[in-house]
Length: 503
Image (cartoon, rainbow, N blue to C red; front, top):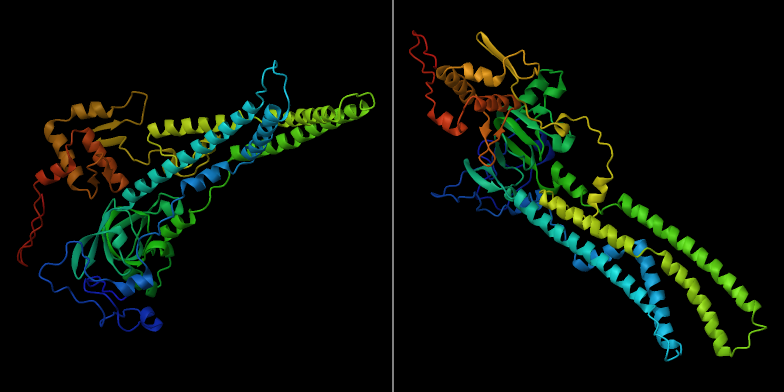
């Protein structure tokens, strides 16, 4: 990685000289000492930790930004919305109906006293329905796609703490490079793959990659090497790998970035998700309906056409009309047969489906649920059974204190029989000194912290449960409780005397 595990990348780095052989890279304990490991000598280093171009590093390992997906144009979305069998069938029916209606209006002589033919109105109505379906579907998808682009750009734009040239900087996740040293704290979202260098009690939630919300303990890479040399048997406990997209639940530590962008595990998952949407169940059903209508309508129209044609041919011997009148009678037979197909096509069905889905999408937006694809509402509406084996899926994934014993008093909120003391009753039985002692003990002896945005606690599930219990007892803002606490640290005395403990 051409980096230093103590000071990180050099801010001065641009191009890298020489190369690292495979034997050198795989040699345990080997450290790169001739590369860009020197500290930045500037008196005032840049605030964002960026000064060098890191050209070779970016060329070899890429950066931590995924390539932007090319936005789908409105014309392409209109073509995708029009690319439906039932709309094709409606187009054919509209063309035939409009052509026959115009023929009846302009191609046939009419008696001035007879009202003009308005058969062309049905063809125009079908064309208007097609245009509305295409415009509503494509405009809705176009609007939602751009809303998701803005949402993802804001969601992914965050800063992490990176060490470069021995100093810590806040750097955007897009500027992270392979070889960077990143500090981890509870609540952080891992931006890139790496290996843990040092840390204390680091536990991560890798449900984004594995689907399981278990807290996985991480061990530093050097410690893993030592345990392997000692013949440690349990390989499940030797996990130094930090997976991108996971969340830090407990502990603090520093890890070395090994893969960024499209080369990281989370980047590969996101790139694999960039596929064309499969047809929804309703689309499949409508395509089947269109095929059935086309087959049955054509068969019925063909059968009617041949019946009327045979009847027309049988009456030619007694038909005294002129050749133009006979041709007009034949055209009337053809018009009747085609009218059967046009009438059989439900021109209002695609319009009703599209408007219903657009209305459902609007209702979901009001509930703070953004729907990127119009037909996604129909897909979720078809779900009749949800099968899950993960606790966090069907619950809030939040632990709470339901039973406790303090001295001779206890409470049990989990028992709804009313026989045990409830938490509210227990809280009322405590005096101010006892309540303050409990709040101080819980708030100070915890590594979890409070999210300023929504007031939730981030960290170990057990610690967050205790903090919620302390809040029920009357605890104020967590940061204020900790700043007001009076902590006496351990102070060593001379070798012949004992040490004083903290109070």
